[in-house]
Image (cartoon, rainbow, N blue to C red):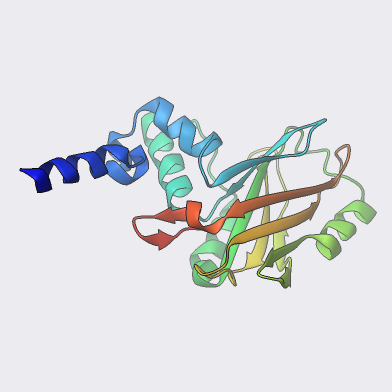
Length: 188
């Protein structure tokens, strides 16, 4: 009896994304995963921007479930990005930023600066941006591609960003590794 009670208490204390499959998540829970979970952060202010780990399984599952429920009203990712990810998923992680005005993506000099200055830092190891997919009218999300070098033993991962075309383009966002575990596995 005590073992059963302990199991129930542990089960009840888990976040919903650990306790039930995505098809059983409510619409509010899907919104929570996409906007207020360990895989999402806000960076800076004026404007405050949402940043999320697009290659993390909970994010991908929430977006997939949302597309099913809303009959594809959530924009599909750019086909080039989808192909790239299919071929490179094991080697990269993608930080995504919804872009309010996809046709205003800074000057050529600002975009060059983004490529040069965006880095990810984990345990004093720094890795440069390896590519990006700019926002488009049909897919208004900036996707920044980094090497998948973060380890479960790292304490945190810090992204230093330069985002073209917005006020105060220098941003930092940090994720704690222990919070990014999903079904016992690091998800980024």
